[in-house]
Length: 299
Ligand SMILES: Cc1cc2nc3c(=O)[nH]c(=O)nc-3n(C[C@H](O)[C@H](O)[C@H](O)COP(=O)(O)OP(=O)(O)OC[C@H]3O[C@@H](n4cnc5c(N)ncnc54)[C@H](O)[C@@H]3O)c2cc1C
Image (cartoon, rainbow, N blue to C red):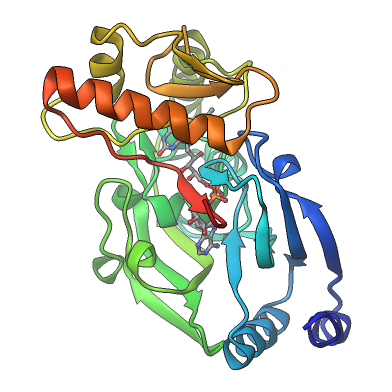
């Protein structure tokens, strides 16, 4: 498979890397080696790679900024397609962002243009593609409120445009959670507002984030989804689990909704810790917590 992937990459101006440490590409700083890795900056190259993987039944995983994945200690036996696609284009009050654009960069661009709608999203450390996949949100803002359409590539390497109504956006979920497809670009409709007000809101949200969240330690953000009728962090805190530790993984002392890597944590530590938290919370409160990060590789 290496020769086939190498040939496609060379034809499309991309490079095939081998034995890439996932711990260096995930915000948790966890994960073994991926066999193959491509920085995807070519749509035609991506199409050729997807067609080849499909033909050869070779596994691939689409990665944004790795801020919501938990990668296996054994790594990944396939090719990681790391989406770069960095363009931002303004179309009236809308921004069309390549899937690889950081949300923070998109929000900054919107601020500069005096366009409101992304302020609460600006501190989320992911890409626009990852944010659409997860329907990311914070402080009352959510991707679903601003996305009007997206371009994506199917498994056969063909590009389609979907309006927001067909994206099945709900809490930390999109159609891409259940159907294969690589998000290429996202159109977000914003509205004009006073630039100073936009800046003030962004700064306020960033301040609140740094006050409440353990941003000094590696994590994947909120480790559990919000259960209906409560909050994961509240339940974990009420069960006295702040500071609960397994190996290098710990329920953050600062924010019980975050599992952090205190140094040297491996995936197995995080999974054991999360299993313990889920069991204890369910026994004591009746709420079943579900993991939010996407699992990458064989667990
Ligand atoms: C400190 C911290 C704070 C956080 N705060 C928040 C928050 O407030 N709100 C929130 O919602 N999230 C939060 N997160 C989680 C995370 O940042 C978001 O879910 C983000 O949107 C993930 O984007 P990503 O590019 O890192 O995606 P990744 O982690 O790389 O991938 C996540 C999923 O998206 C898929 N994916 C990524 N790009 C594409 C693409 N182009 N096409 C198809 N599939 C793709 C991947 O296959 C994977 O299944 C936080 C994380 C951290 C570490």
